[in-house]
Length: 334
Image (cartoon, rainbow, N blue to C red; front, side, top):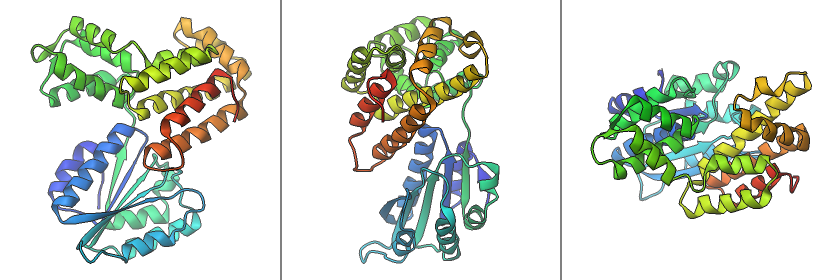
């Protein structure tokens, strides 16, 4: 079966369902939309039951094979959705996935969701076994140069168009966050007086949604302004901003700080590492305040928050985001 990208998925689903779908990538919006499309297509084919499994540390891989063999009396077909946030099943998981692939049938559909796989993982036995019976959807990041084109395509799909300057304004506003871009486009559908979005309309729309800004939250945290960062976080929640958008921004900043810190330690100047001049002192202060071990612990905590957002019950996602905000502000350490 093929390796495809998200644009090819609708046509692939129209050709019929496979027993296995592997969705791999680090773009939450595109991952979510691919999974939604697969679930919807499966429901149309009578898959009315769904088991959700989280393949985290110490996961019992017997649950996967047990789920495959435990169809309900009232549902002919079942979706088994397995989320593997670490991306590496280990020896036991590899064997279980290969065994599942060997038993693939029309009564169960496996939807495996995991981060972007590297070349060695794509060549592993368990991936090859799943691919032999199913479809692998590879989701690649949309970089800054591709973002305006992605936004334009998204606008067109929603029955809108925009001036090039307006598209650039939105691209700069969301800074590569596809989920935030999608939410802004939904707002534009309500605000637009006609089908063409002008630069003025985009500016006004951006200004109206910028009272509590995700990137303002990051800058306050980097500056050590814990109280201001917490107020902004509370404002974001009150205004209905989705938790994954906030987590994406915080996790991205933590990863950037780790990389920046390494390069600063190698003697590279801050002005070559941080392009926006006004952010240079913020990043430099944060790098002095937070050491790599802190940032690595924050990333582990961010993964736990991500699991909570995806359906785990071990914490309230917003409580986790509050803790990460305080961590980044230097008021707590994990």
